[in-house]
Structure formats: C-alpha cells, structure tokens
Image (cartoon, rainbow over all chains, first blue to last red; front, top):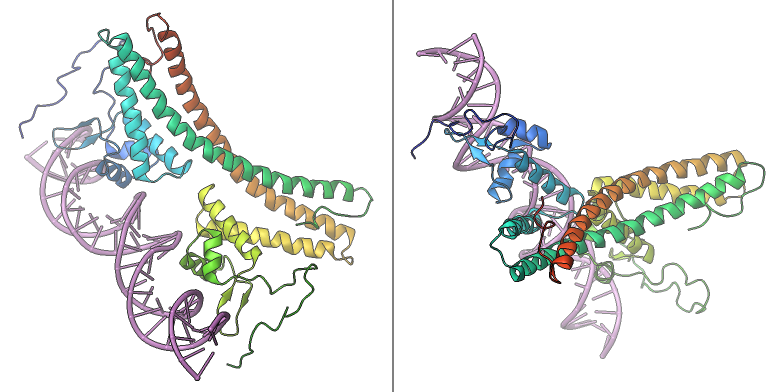
Length: 175
Length: 175
DNA sequence: TTCAAGTCTTACCTTGACGTCAGGGTTGGC
DNA sequence: GCCAACCCTGACGTCAAGGTAAGACTTGAA
C-alpha cells in the first residue's frame, strides 16, 4: 500500500474559518477516555460496523473525530436508555446515516420539489419509527414510576397523621 | 421419603370464602407460561434466591402461587424497564420483602407508636431510593424523546411549507 | 537514532442469563 | 397398576459484549 507523508492538507489553513477537517483527531486512547468507553469497545463497535474512525495515520493507527465520538455516545445512550442490543443499534444508526444522506441530497440545488417531498417523507417515517419505540418505553417507565409514587404517598400519609398524636389506621398496613 | 396421597387439604372447602391457601398453586410449566418466562428462568431465579416457590408436592415438584408470579413479573419489569441485572434486582426485591415484613409488624397491635414511626420511615427511605433510580432513567429518556420530537417537528415543517407551492429553505438541510 | 508510550491485530477468556440434554422420579387419569 | 405427560437435578452449551494478553509495529520527543 502506497502512502503519503500525511498532514499535507490543511498545512497552512486560515485559522478562524471552517475548523478544517483532519485536525483535532484523537488517538484511540484519548477517544475512549473522552467517550467514556474502553478502547476494546471502540474496536468492537468498529468490527460490527457501528463506527468507522474518520482517519488512520499512515502507520495504520485509528484517529477519531468529534463526530465519531458523538456516535459512540449515541450508541451508549441507545444501550443504556433503551436497552437495545448492538444489532438493533446498528439499525438505528443506519437510519441516522440515511437521514444525513438525505440532507445532502436535499441541500443540493438540483433536487426537484417532488423529490424533496419524497425524501422528507422518508425521514419522517424513520424518525417516527424510532419515536414509537422510545415512547413505548417511556409509558412503561412512567407507569412504573407512578406505582412507586403511590407507595411513597401512602407511607407519607401514615407518617403524617401518625406523627402528631393520632393512632395508625391504615397506610402501611395495606398491600 | 414418606408421602401422603396429596390433595387432602381443601378437599371440600366452602366455595366462596377465603380461597384457602394451598389451592390454586401452579406447576412450573403453567407458571412459566403465565408469567411469560421459561421454566429454566424460574429455576434460575430460584437458584439466585430471587424467588422461592410457595410450595412443593410431597414428591418435590415446585408449586407457584399467584404471588410468586407477581414477583416474577416484577423481575422482568426491573430487567426490561430499568435494565437492572439480577444482582441489582435482588437488592430491590429484598427491599420489597423488607417492606412486607414491616407491614406485618406495623399491623401488630403491640407495636408502639415510636416503633411504627421508625418503620414507616425506613419504608420511605427504601422506596425513595428506588424512586431516584427510576426518575433518573425517566429524565434521560424524556430528554432523548424530546430530541427525537424536535427532529420530527423540523421535518414536518419542511413537508408543510414545501408541499403547497413555496420552495424549500431550511429544515431538513440542517444538522 | 533511540526509546518509552501508545497502538495494531489475533486469539483466547469471562460473565450474565439463560438453553438444552440426559437420566431418572412424580402425577393423575383410566 | 399403568402409562403418558410433566418435573427433578445436574451438567454442559451458547450468545452478546466486551476483557485480557501476546507479540509486533508506530509515533514523537529527546
């Protein structure tokens, strides 16, 4: 495999403007630390096709961009919040990617109105699908929480009218 | 091992009244089916000390009560909704048990007011601890959902003012 | 140039939560 | 009393999601 000496692009870029791609890429150690995961996890996610480091050094070392890290964070969210496994997460991420792809085409001036319409509609479907999953989870969780709150309220009442001087009557003594 | 011919209790019990303990106990197959888990799971949960079938036949077969099943359902909830592992679930269940225990003592007429106070307070701590866990999860999920909703809303607007006759300006074309 | 620190790939190991199978015991209806 | 259906206790298998270790290669500072 032929190689370049690297760092030829952005050699002397104007400082303020577009921060320039290819700068600010982290090695796997730093990336893992910042994303709060292990290096192994990063390699594993890559192996499953969930992420791809934005770059590699000529010697073959992975380099992660800020965007890559956001993606990792997304993975953890989907794992922890929704309890999805990595296969399911792959689906969600692919949908995310499709969204980005669509945005590209959408921005393109040559895209016709009808096409735009169709693309936006596709986005909608993708997102509403995800929304349904999340919403289902939310409702279940809300119900669960309400249940806990009921118990707490019952105990609180007991404490309240038990504290002053009355005698207990119910509350804790109920299933 | 000496044995009885079984089914001597509740042989001719009055139908309506207290359904009588020891009746209505399910064998593991039926229990698993009703709880929506595998037989293996039931045995496994027992092995970890999460549940204990209310009874055994003289021959050693497990018999599950309705309460046992509720407990199993609880385990699944804690697994799926909160993403707790079985060790963590054990903690929650032990807290549940402590609650029940307290209710017993609480109901006892001999328990003094000060003691009742203390017990109720202990319950409160236990439940509020659980509540905190759930609430944290809920907040995170809510945030996530809001994010999805924002995306959806953005797309919807594009579809709206793109549909009639205007030309696209933003919406999908934004990160 | 050299060297320590960091990375690379490959490959086997671990943990949690069960699945599955074998070999034998139990139940309950006939 | 008999038999099919069910259940018992081991014990080994499996799958996801990484952990860990080995041996070689890269990198960057001195």
